[in-house]
Length: 254
Length: 310
Image (cartoon, rainbow over all chains, first blue to last red; front, top):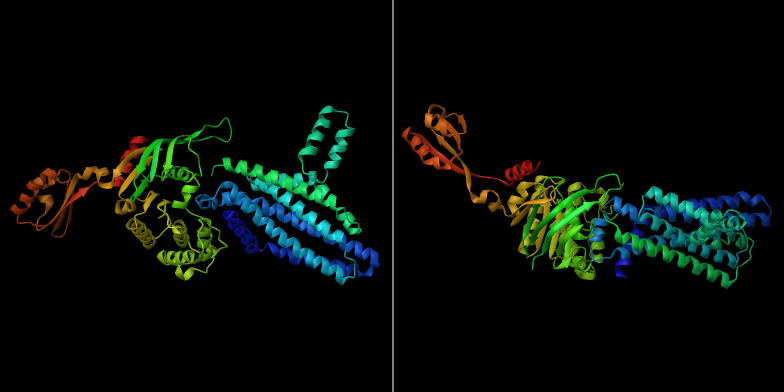
């Protein structure tokens, strides 16, 4: 456990020193500019647009960091050969993978928390109402980021950074379209297409389940049961990916 | 118990594509390193030195054969508490300062508190980086990186230190410093196993060496045993007051004759003819300045054996 913590802390430090949190400036500037520019609109429209934009920005920036830092978590260590001295220490490969993951999760959590703070301040400043549904949406965004980071890490344990990025982005997009996959499977007359659709529906992460931004922007909260189920689903999916990443990484040679 | 045991070790890299041939890098390599020894692992580039070291650390898995480190199978994570490792041309987390870097590796080895603080300070001084302790590694020169890398290998006071080309990229002063650190480790009873292709380093500090070419062991043993079993191969004679070229005996016996003013240097390939030459010098009123027996070197051995293998 200690080794996981040491690796996680170092990964977090690396992210900080790589100036990843600078994106927060962009985020803040974007939100403040949006709410100022939209001041000419009616109060209800302005509120809706600022809320929509804030949640979308938190989601998008988080996903970009999760994918593009996530794919380098392990592959960069191998390319730069920093892995050699780490693996020569009393640390198992699984501990290393989990430590790297945890480090990025801490970075993402700090990032999302700060973005949420700026977002709430902007809402307060533009006299928009603050609902509990906003917090629910951000919590599920964080769960989605856990899944996306696990996806990126999983691919980076056996493929190049470029390939990992393509596959993660691909799965992220499919993950938001899984209900369409099921629909296509049900309506398709071709048995092969139907089977493929169903298989993909169950294998790909259902990220749309974690997307309640539309409801949140309208101020409609989701039930606690839904929130819990979506969270457990996301955590379970991320755990399975991490377990698979650990198994693959154990077999790798450097 | 030996610190390292390598027994009929083989490593074949599978090709990325089925139609490409597999590459066999190690072919039945066997040798062992005793505790408390400085053991040099010598061979030309591409001989399989780094592959062997990677197997010992667990970065690679052998195809067949046995590799043991401190009594445990190579790659055993628990044994890593007692091993320090410096890879070839190391690249480290360059966003860390030298101090943070050593602390990180200390923490990974389960160290902390005052002991780690003391160790970090002592090692930075040992490798001559005390003044650069708060500088980020991205601002370090190659030699400084090599030295801080050596410090990380020693941070947890390991029993066995495995170094891959520790002197490469260093200037003569840097190389001497690394040699001194290795000798100091021997005084502390540690075992040092290092690979190199720089032969004088091996001759200067190693108790024993293993020479590897194309994945096979050419020779293993004490340096003086390997270089002609201590046998004198030729004799170099320097004398004054004679002209070597003018004396038929010397002209016939010496393979090399160099005349510098009144001084004459000659190399005699057959040491048993030294007496005749000395008598000749005295007969012609020459004055003997020096007689130096010339022994073979590891370099000669390596070049000779490697060329036989090709």
